[in-house]
Length: 153
Image 1 (cartoon, rainbow, N blue to C red):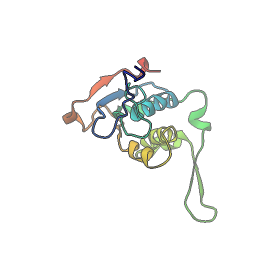
Image 2: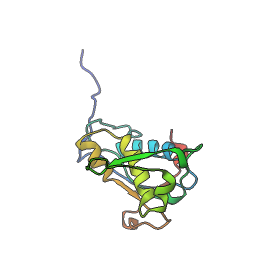
Image 3: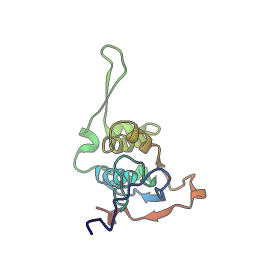
Image 4: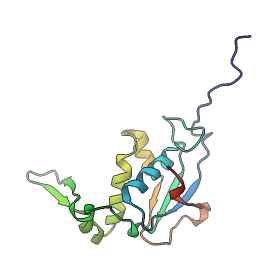
């Protein structure tokens, strides 16, 4: 008998088991935190990972204000944006961004977005990320479980 006794099972929107997780970002390094968050959003830690489907978790980051950069990145790293007008390039450092409203949110979203796939799937995955600067969040109704991000690779 030459038939396989197993089949590769691909997840789809209906069969994906999405969970809600809370991550405490206190004293976490930005890049290392965001790479793990991107993997959680993508679903890479799950055994039924399917590359073209949103099978990842919904991630809530609390205490985002307390994230850190290594070395001199806090003052030397440069975020560039363009207004659309001639001579409209604007440069910002993380230290300047922290002082602005939702600055930490923009820093973390920028880092996570760069680690997700480009296109419609990546843009929809960004909708599963919730960032709060303090300890309070609005997703208590979803009963999220708190995880220790340091246990993930």
